[in-house]
Image 1: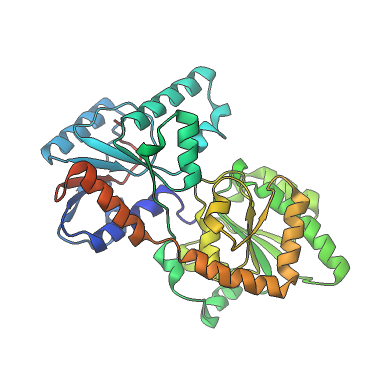
Image 2: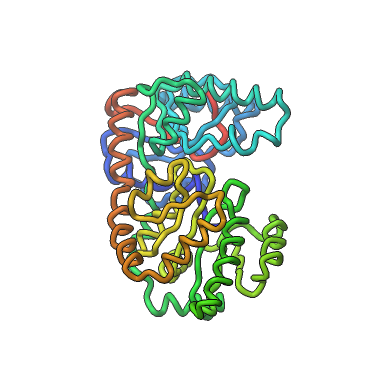
Length: 382
């Protein structure tokens, strides 16, 4: 799958910080490859390669010594973590979601779940500031871990700048026809494939939609394109396709780079994203930036993120998803309304605006003109 998650967040926020901040010194701590992915940076940004796993004793000691030598005033860890550590300076943490404490707990024993929960709470309580990527995520941190609202600041995510390069050209669309053999109308899902993403219900809704459209003589060649993890990891999806009789109409694409994903977004008739849980949910915003109508969930952070620019559905109701897809496909007035609202909604989220909030928080907590460390890998913990 194209690179979703913490890596996308970190690269984009560092680039925005570099555009806006020439006063503070930044040290980027992570693998040389991750640092190189960010691209050219000004003189007040420097990379410090660090490949050791700092959940090990040796890695932890080396990380701590490195921070002391660099005389860091503040560490920004761009993801929620739990491993107990003691940093030699203040730290702030970005919380993208609390998925680990909701949808994956069945993979652990009761003791491990309890320990994971307690240690995560300790991390949050000792942070000087918690950055939540949505009001929904902030409320979850308050509710589940009992953190006071005054210690949590909402700083929204934004989409990768490569999704803002205008519409796909005819030459771009030829890529879909020649490389991916896509010559017909299609619905699109893009994102990770895991139970909370609700991809099984997308396929079931698509199967019901095909039956309804066939009776009406509309969109006879409509396909469903699923861009995500390799299908071999998710045999339940193939079984759902066969059960729904849509083997010839559902395509699983696996990994797609952003340069190609933006073409898929642009060419799709509808983007469907009925996720059961999202801390923010970038894919609907990416689709809206291309003027593609969106059908998404009425739960978690998604209503907050899409505003009035998408059709909201109960993600647990297959026929509600199907009816929404049908409506968005055939109602041209609605499609145009969603297109215009989508453009406006996507523009509300900006990495520069988010970086400005971070800089103000850094200077409030760590002082102006001081050294900030941004972690580029998911290893460190206080």
